[in-house]
Structures are given as structure tokens and as C-alpha cells.
Amino acid sequence: MVWRAFSLHHRTPLFHVQGNLTGLRYRDEILRPLAVPTLQQMGPQAVYQDDNARPHRARVVNDFLQQSGVDRIEWPACSRDLNPIENLWDELDRKVRSNLPPPRDVQHLYQMLQGPF
Image (cartoon, rainbow, N blue to C red; front, side):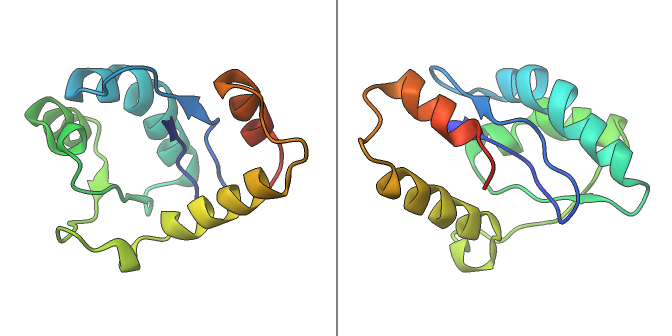
């Protein structure tokens, strides 16, 4: 699994999530080092959008985002059509499928996804 936050002018590095993502890992490995600094660069009008995945809605995550002053979009369950990340996943899928030869392993796939798109 990979994770990335993006906006029109900002993008975090692609993060390779290995193993199960818990609320603590989401806070410590993704939000604190990647998402919150990017939101701060974007300015006070920045709003964070994630989905209703269990790690994203853990109490430790909610508390951290509130303490960090991060505004967050409330998100209805099962609303894939509204999420702009789906467009990015489609673009990544096209990139992977157009790569010949195909990635030989997970590490090669991750390296390929690091490139511009």
C-alpha cells in the first residue's frame, strides 16, 4: 500500500506502508512527518481530506489533528465518487500498465511510482 497527500501545488513524498496501518502508525509515520508539514506550507486555509478508513478515524488521530490545528473535511462513508484521490489512483494504474516490462517485484513497482506523473 502507498500513501500520498496532494493538492494543486503541493505533494508529499510517496510513502510505502508496510504491514498493517494502525492509528498510531498513521499519526507517527504519515501525519506528523508528511501531511501536517505540507498543510502548514499551504497556509491557514488548507483543509485535510481523508476517508473513513479505521486508522484515519482513530481517536489518537482525531486528537492529534485537533491539537495540530488541522481542519478536516467530514466525509460520508462509502463515498468514493467524491474523492479526488481516485483520479490519482487511475493515473497510477495507467502508468503501471503502460510500463514494459512490468515491475518485477514490489520494490521495483514502488520505485516506478516515485517518478513524475
